[in-house]
Length: 230
Ligand SMILES: Cc1cc2nc3c(=O)[nH]c(=O)nc-3n(C[C@H](O)[C@H](O)[C@H](O)COP(=O)(O)O)c2cc1C
Image (cartoon, rainbow, N blue to C red; front, side):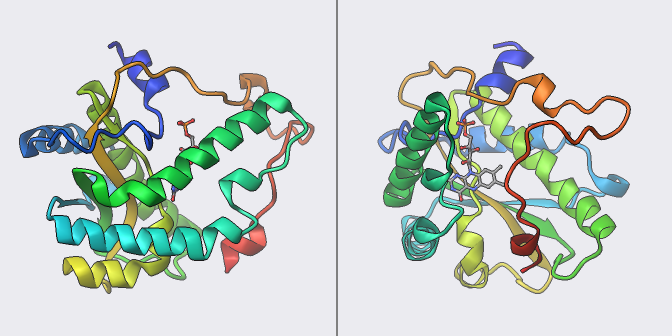
């Protein structure tokens, strides 16, 4: 696979995670090694990878995830299956994503490995825009690089944040020092069933490209300023 193929076919894999084939720890280590080449603010790598293989710990994380998913998220305005659109193609895509997300909530405990990426040395509660962009921005590229490296090796991943609603309990389960380590992303890691993954439906370049300043007539997305502040 060339770089563009990896970049355009690294999908959120949820229903095609093979629960029967163990993932060698060495392959996870390779993906982390690749991920560590990502940029980081002040060139200080603050990303930590908590690799969870123990079945009881995985089950504990899966329970937290499913509780938030079923108990809060599925009934919320933000539920992936509730996005309103007049475009039939987009509605179908959203519906497929919703069924896929539902399936992951039911099957996370079966997945061979769960990786949680963390920000070490800070919590962003109440942080300034600059601090949060700089610190979180140090973890996000490494997290995505990990997923790209996984894809290049035939592994499927799915960026999730659902369990963060119960982050403290996850921290207690895994012995993560909550006061100075912030969890950022939880991803299943498993061999995929089949290797064919394609490009996904996304906005056109002209819908997102602002040339020489901001153009306000491009398609917008729901404004969630209130939600983001809460
Ligand atoms: C910040 C972030 C949070 C996400 N949280 C979840 C999540 O909690 N659960 C889930 O199933 N998918 C989650 N996703 C995955 C998105 O739903 C997925 O990237 C999107 O549907 C596009 O998938 P595709 O690339 O396969 O088209 C998250 C993605 C991002 C970037």
